[in-house]
Image (tube, rainbow, N blue to C red):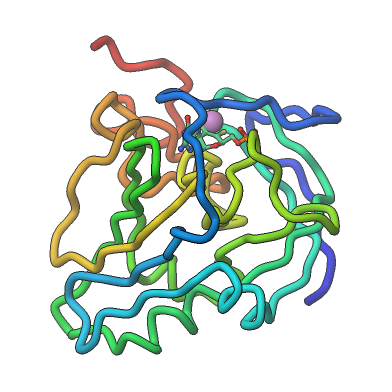
Length: 200
Ligand SMILES: Nc1nc2c(c(=O)[nH]1)N[C@H]1C(S)=C(S)[C@@H](COP(=O)(O)O)O[C@H]1N2
Ligand SMILES: [Mo]
């Protein structure tokens, strides 16, 4: 896929990722690791790390945007198209949202329609190398048009669900969808275009 760089409203470029681990950095045993597709699907599926590596079909440069205002430009990402993983499980028609679960207990929710976009990826490699422990080894979803909190590090499953429910940051006032171009930073009366944090 082609390269693409543009700074969204309210963002500034930084050179490096700022690592976040709201619930700590978990230990991962790669032999036990599985990525699962569950919930409203015809057949639940489970993938080993090796299987995911063999399925890698996306290689592109995209920018990464954290809702706190920093963006890292021109990052190289490699991984498996999320659309392919969803389709292998055959989603039921009631499925509308996807909840991502991580090893550390982190969760985040994304509309199924965003997960099905061509450039939504289960990332395994960044800048030519497997994700580091800090960056979320072995895998994290990435949505170029959504804020970084939707990119759950150390991800272990995605569950297709019928209705929106809060994940970790959504419960703390962050937006249901989090589109960077519409500045969907916070929910409700702080929602679209609001730079102000919710009072919690
Ligand atoms: N498991 C987990 N995933 C997470 C987070 C986290 O704290 N824990 N922080 C999120 C936020 S807010 C951002 S901006 C990115 C940051 O990615 P980085 O730590 O690789 O810079 O990870 C997202 N995924
Ligand atoms: Mo973030």
